Length: 382
Length: 198
Image 1 (cartoon, rainbow over the protein chains, first blue to last red):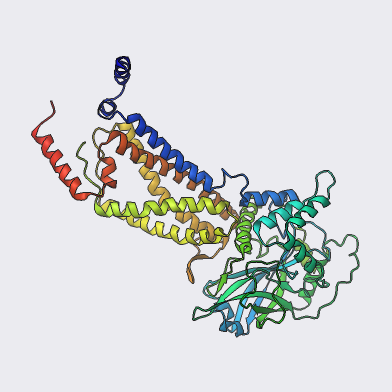
Image 2 (cartoon, rainbow over the protein chains, first blue to last red; image 1 turned 90 degrees about the horizontal axis):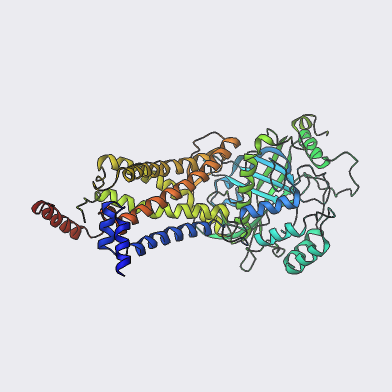
């Protein structure tokens, strides 16, 4: 004991005055230094845990992006999903009818500019157009005052999954096997067995009417939202855009060889001919209608409101188009439209944000899109 | 213990108001950038107004610092630590001010609406430019990690003053007991004047 004290004295002789004073008057110095270290470590650990670095099994934005990469390969500068698309512009003419259930400025009677995007689902920006590929329409409504509304809709009646985890597992299950280049049927079977909601949704999706092109497709918002009126009352809603132009069934014949962009070419040619229109239909949900599960359709016969008409009168390539530097984040909503309890809304918003950042970072390396400005200039003759 | 004067009340109020806000902001930021869960929407909708509140309070704090200068460090603090204290405080002030501006700027460059609450929005402060957005978005992350590191250093140094050096620096910002503190201080000052050190 005496030896250690002597040692300590020798040791502390090297230390500055305050340290000697501290050790002499406070024998618990090491304990207190240790406590400071423990606090520092705990705070750093909590920060790392929050950032997902300590939980490899947690589904993060980066892991979602990695799953897209595994499924589709690397395509620098493109959206990670719905990668092949064209920009469009036009306007929304509100009928004023939805103003009774939503205070959003966009629903007041009048005209609002719209910047949109038509695309094919999937992360392959050069995939050949095919009738069965899911088609999408994204819209950005720009009412005066800056309260934007952005929405992305698909030509399917329900969404195939109802959670971020389900989406992630679906991506992995349908990813091509590196050995065969095709999805592994056993993986798909296991995925569907684990996700009966997806099996049910895929059956509904398979039965959908496939039309001849983008212009005569109905696009559904799929996720539920809530409309809030001026008095603060809210109700669950889903929305769709339904073509005004006559609907023609898909001819079911394979597009001509080399006509890889026939759906986009047709759309560009049709818009150049005369503007195309869709009616914005808002379906009002009732108590018991699922708002948190996008795989479930609402019962037939729910009351619907014709909120107005979307007119698209110009198309342009993504390269230089007005939709390119925009993230069609489904949570960009005006006051009067609120998210529901659907977990896909947060998942989409988060994944889109990450995809948007990645392609912004890669912008200078991006190759030309499938539908180039020259092709649009030529009137949709790829 | 040395007689160390306290920070003025306004300075202490601003410090303790902003400290939990900034720590919450760092955790919300790193959490939302990793999340695809239901919490993402909530975290983002807190992050934006909280960031702007920090920006406003930070400007108030800089003004306050000129009106109410902080007390000097005790003479016992070595010059290297004195320098580290000065540098880390400049870094903290700079980051508190720049982080919200970079956040506001990057949302502007991406043309995300900058919604504070309901219909209350801020105007964009930069042109719509994807490359500019990418640059600011990366900067926002780098500065966030830097701010977290600076906060850790600041917190560690505060604990070091409070638990190891016990030189009154910790109490000059952290002491709640103003009366008792003043009394002890007075006693210490009287003591030190009456009985000079040998």
